[in-house]
Image (tube, rainbow, N blue to C red):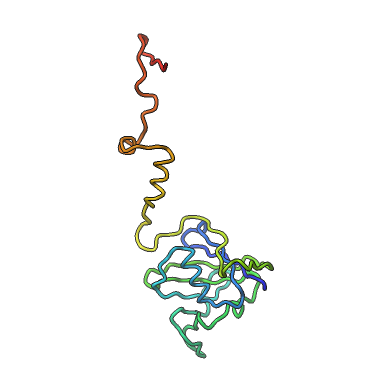
Length: 183
């Protein structure tokens, strides 16, 4: 079965994106869950996909909270809509908006079709991450485990960490010309 490859750009910085492979028969709701996971969001808020043109002008809306597709409804259901029902062009575009209050906006573009499905992978599958994902709430914290790894790797003790630098080159004996001797 073929796989659709989408690039999901963060609207505020197009150098931050995630590439996601998904089966054409999977729903927009599954795609939505893959995006929030790829960007490390909590998934507690509603989201919408909008069909889009080349200028990112929004068309029909597909919302995560709508359960049934109804004719002439303001929004259709992500849960009931397979992706292949909306992909009509080789460069299909969508606008994805997460959390209607904060309006996290992502630009979604079909970048290719892959013929090879890996039976060992679970789809949708994030196969590329570029840039640091935005922090959903406030600022992303420092990972203490990573900081400890750096400390161990460079054998930084508490004294060096407190001063901000090591003591290499210190403690040499002075000679008469004001030069240090490093015997």
